[in-house]
Structures are given as C-alpha cells and as structure tokens.
Length: 303
Image (cartoon, rainbow, N blue to C red; front, side, top):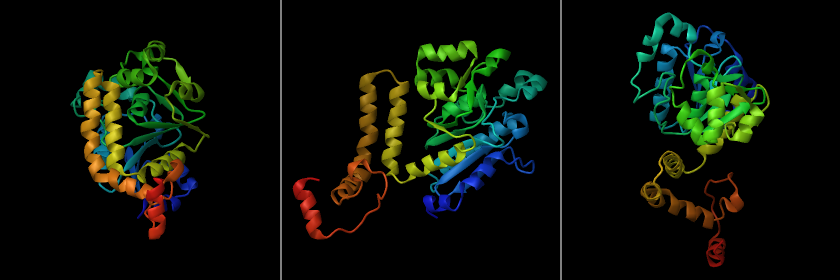
C-alpha cells in the first residue's frame, strides 16, 4: 500500500492513541507499519519510557529491522504515554551496578539501543514530555526532531553522575556548537521547546499531543523523493559534519553522488523537462504524459 494512502487511513486520533495508550500486554518496544513509514514506540510509560537492558536490545533490533526492510523508507521514534524517554532506568542501574552497561558491543550499539551506529535511513523523533539524559541522546541520534511545545530536554543525568555515553557529547556539539553544548552538559539544566528550536535542537515545534502525527506527516513527505539521491546526500552531510578535512569531504561527496547521477538524476532531469516539480514544488512528482509539442517547447525554452 502506498505510504500516503496508508497514512490517510490512520487518522490523528489513532496516532494520538498510539502515543498515549498504556498497554501492559505489549512489549517494551512497539513497531507499527504505515505504508513506507515505520513507527517505533518505547512502551514503558509507567517509567516515563526509561530504557533498560531489554528495551535497549529491542530498540536496536527494531532499527536494524527497519534498515533491512526495503519497503520501509523512513522511521519515526516516539514514546508511549506522554513522554519520549527519561533516560536509562536508574532503578536497574542501582540494582545491577555497572554490569548493566556491559551488555553491549559499543561498536555495534549503544547502551540506550542503536546510538553508537549510523542509522542507514532517515529517522525522525516525535518528542513529547521529557526527552532527557539518555532520552535526549536518543533524540539527538535522529535526523530530525519534531517536539511538542511543552516538551523538555536536558542532560538530567548530570545530577547523578551518569555520563553521556550514547553519543550525546558528539552529536550535541555538532548541532549547537561548543559553547551551547557545554552550557547544557555542564549545568544539566532544562531546555524548553522555544529555546531548543532557536538553538537548532528542534526542527519543528507542534501543539501538545500532536508530535507523532506531525512526525509521520514529515516522514511521509520524505518518501516521495528519489531515495538513492536522498540517502547519498544525507550520508555526505553527516560525513561533512563529523570529518574535518575539506579535500576528503569533497572527494567523499563526489564518490557517493556520482553513481546517483547515473541512477536517478537523469530520470529526474527528464521529469523536470516534462513539467514536473517546477518552482520548488515537492508534490505531484509522479510522471505525467505531455503532448509532444509541449515537450519540444519545454526543451526549446530550457524550462
């Protein structure tokens, strides 16, 4: 089923119920398929969706399954019950000691799940309530963050001597710069939606209770583009951010972009000549038949 058609059959009330309904019969991570969009929900609302060892493994598995699913192009990560994620489950850490943090291969996955790896396809965070400590690191792992106007982020683990161990120091600094990153990391203070947006942590601010639906809308909007090109540009952008040598960056961009020109760009240019996607439009991108005289006119005027 086409992704947009699937989404139209999933009204906002159902999406809100997915985010807010507590269902103890379901596992700690719930996965739903909406056409070409996969939603991945942390389902421990009684713990404000804190992640324990089991949940971390299930999150990693869900991300890997999404990456390997050729029919799924974009994923949305959210929290059930009004909070995104309040970090690692400190009750488990207190009971099990540091052995809780020895369950994972740091090269393959993080302590909060898949945070030590580069997710191969776009991932959007739908942030409600608290996204703090390791929960903030999960949000930072995502490409884009749609956050509700009442949401709160912050390095709350500062209070308890729990370090940012899931890429937080790396990703936060890349997003907001050294000075602002140190402000949050050293003080452990809260940052609300408006300030997060001004700093570049949030990509969209939405009304309370709507982040999942809005994030799915955003995900759907990404599925209609040529995917090889989108993924190549995305990967090159990450490379540019986390690599400091200019000539290597330009070479990397060229190496990964040139095959796309052969695969999709020529087809895209042909679509443009045929009148599709003019004036920056990102809708109605499907091919349509034009009379031969119109095609010739377009080519002649280089439209």
